[in-house]
Length: 268
Ligand SMILES: [Zn+2]
Image (cartoon, rainbow, N blue to C red):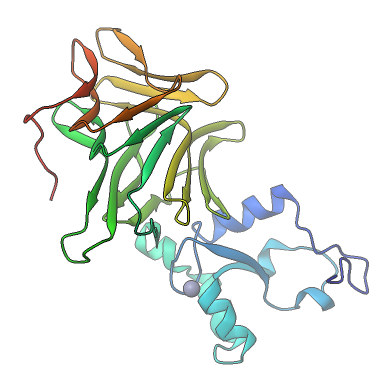
């Protein structure tokens, strides 16, 4: 087993508060390239020489950039420079790529499984969550999505499998296959898990507002879609929904589930 504390008795494990500070100062992505799937790294001193987990000497690095540091291809100076002006703060967002595999993906919202439904969620004429076969890459699927917070501010979007999270978010955390976006310490705006080996995209938590429509819920309390006139339906209470053009359609004065329709304006 790997050593759990160093010579100064500093544990390998970093507290959540320190991790959050590091994520925030780095703009939630790799300080060098901006990729969003990252690890926490001691720059100088390295962990085995460090007396504490000091965010000032620590950075987020993606697997690839971390590997280059380990193999001496990237200097420690380069990482320190990058920490002074992290890529994501320059760009205004962090981004990475989803791989959703080759089998037809299914989407899970709460306990409901959506299969062969290209547009899972649509508000008025805008698709919010869609999965389509790739035009360029035959046999693969592409997910596109637009998530807002409860004030209608865009917090996370996916365009043909490339995701982008705004650095104006209070927090974006990636652990394994799960991405969590928080509005504050206890308020999660979006939690999404992508499991490419089983072809599952799961929305575990969501609280969004878009054009007066609200989509909200979590595993415990169920998921709902609500129109601006307050009409509301449960969209995650169980079972399967299969082979429709649109899974859930929210209009100004109604919400419907399971639709075959032509009103969709495709985002390009
Ligand atoms: Zn990187």
